Length: 331
Ligand code: ASP
Image 1 (tube, rainbow, N blue to C red):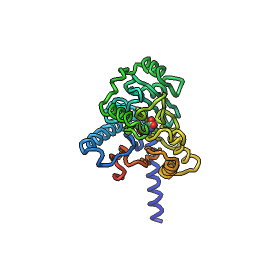
Image 2: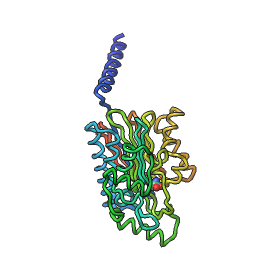
Image 3: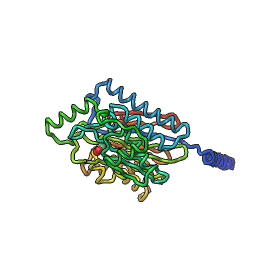
Image 4: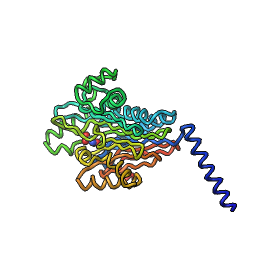
């Protein structure tokens, strides 16, 4: 009897806490990032470079965390976090993006909000400093979801976004990668592509958002577009299920609709996030696709699966719990 009273007291307490959080709109928040997946073992990246990656991943987490801590939306957190990673030359997005066959940087990005299912994306843009901001502008200030090339650049300019010459995105390393690839005329998929960036976030209001930004794959030709700007393939968010941002060999992610498949496994099969993610990773592997993704649900459960030897990744929670990792062996 006493025990029962204790239990009902406890459940009352929990209900009160839940009700208070509904009234104040306060709930736990969480932010997860990736900086690309690929073939990378501890021996292939010098310790100083590993430290530099960890430094910038940590900085990105801190930026996103401060937005969420102050009550900002998950979309604000995603765009601020990804913009930081786009400006960082270590990653294959914005400054530091890989080169296409013609020696130009050609960028793709997308964003999606889980509350409204609103989404925005740009592809093949060469002069927008932060493509993720252009994706957000498409989502919020246009009647469209997906803009490409010159039209997307004109839209971004009219939106007042920063426009830069294509050579702004140049980095020596990435240019050398293109030269090497051309010299060897080897399979373009083996190029040095890793470094796509992505972020999924859950804000204090309980809303999810996902975003992804990339330069694509080294030596890409003929206007090739990967999964990154394709809603449902590289990026997806729905408050009813989860937010997902992918990285890897885009053609496979498009064919499997990876990001939305994770959400649909949860929706149709009622699976928990981790199981849904594992099922999709199995399909990706079976088809011969390489890469991974980050995913987060509304309860703050997160997963960061990949089938390559590494994926730059990390997360931060409102509890202060934080993790940054690079290699599969760090799991
Ligand atoms: N998914 C990107 C693409 O195929 C590349 C990457 O994430 O490494 O364009």
